[in-house]
Length: 137
Image (cartoon, rainbow, N blue to C red; front, top):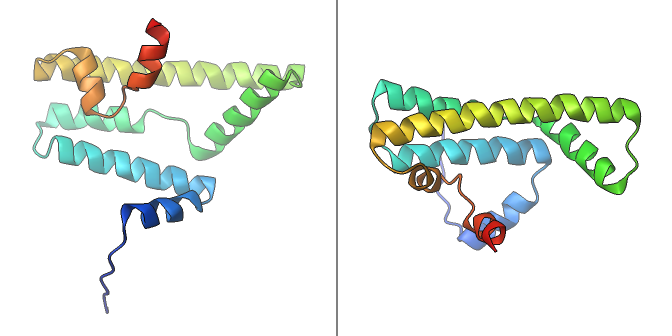
């Protein structure tokens, strides 16, 4: 198989990413999160690897995520039907359950790494400082 090497600037990569369909974007995003984990913690124990995998896997699939976003938009626009509200409640329960799974794994990692929870969240790219700052003000 022939191979080629090309060099792109981060700006060119960003422009290409913006053109991706949602499913392709989500797939790329999850691959990049996995790569980030590997770069942050290149050698980990089996326990750490299992926890990192749990964190990585704890999300809705692409179709569920898209539907959840559609229902959130309808809820905010106050155009949601009773059936859609029930569907939203079910998806929201799944999101909350996945958040519990993910945060429990982060907490266990923090214990293993002997680091504060927020530090581990930040290392894994899960802590949005802008959101935290806005909540505190």
